Image (cartoon, rainbow, N blue to C red; front, side, top):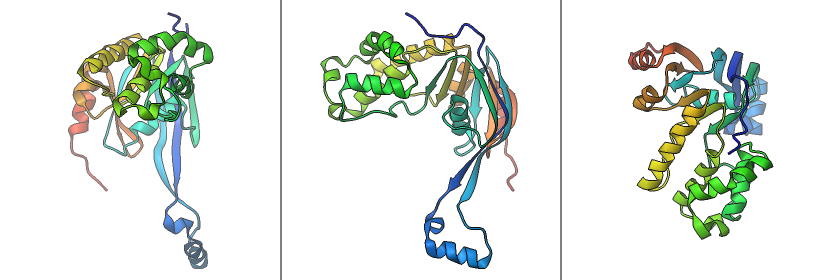
Length: 254
C-alpha cells in the first residue's frame, strides 16, 4: 500500500505561540449592557480566554509525547495548534512531515448521505487527497465491516456503526506525525481489539507521536516524554514517568 509519507525526518516546533479566544456572553451581546459599559468608561467587547500562553516547544523524531493536565489545562488546544486546526494568535508553528489527527473523528459526517459517500466526506475532512481516498477505500471498507449498510444513509446507522466508519477513515493513512486526543473506544469487544491493533500499528509507524489522555497508564505505556500543562502553560517537560509523578503533586493556587 502506498503510505503517502514524507521521506524527510518529521519535526514540529512552536516559537512563543499563544492562542486567545474571545468569549461572547449574553452581556457582551446585549446592546443595553454595551451602552452601560461605554457610559461607565469600561471597555466594550468580548472578554478573552488565554488557552495557550507563549509556548516554545521542540518535537523530534522518536518523541512519544504525553500531554498531562486537568480539563481546561490546554492539552486539546495544543494538539489542535500542532494539527493546524487553530492558527496561533501570536507566535509561529513549524512542521515537517505528513500528519494524522484523531480528535472528533465524526466531524464532517452527513447523516443523510450514504456510508460510501461519507467515506469520501470524512476523508476530505481528515485532509486526505482524492488519490489517497481512492487508494485507501478498500481497506476502509474492509476494516469498518459494515457490509451492505454502506449503501444506506448514515441516519439509519447505530452510533456504534457511525463510529466504526469514522474510525476506519481516520486511521486509514499512516503518517509521520500522529496526534491523538484521548484513545477512542468504538464498537463491540471484537472491533475494539482490532481498533487497538490498528492504533498501535499507526503509533509504531509514526516518527513522532503526541497524545493527550487522562489515563496515566496509557501514557506510560505509549510515551517516553511528558508535558504537564496548566492554564495553557507547560509546568514540566521530561521523562514520562517523572511527568506523571509531577502531575500528582499538589500545587499552590492563586
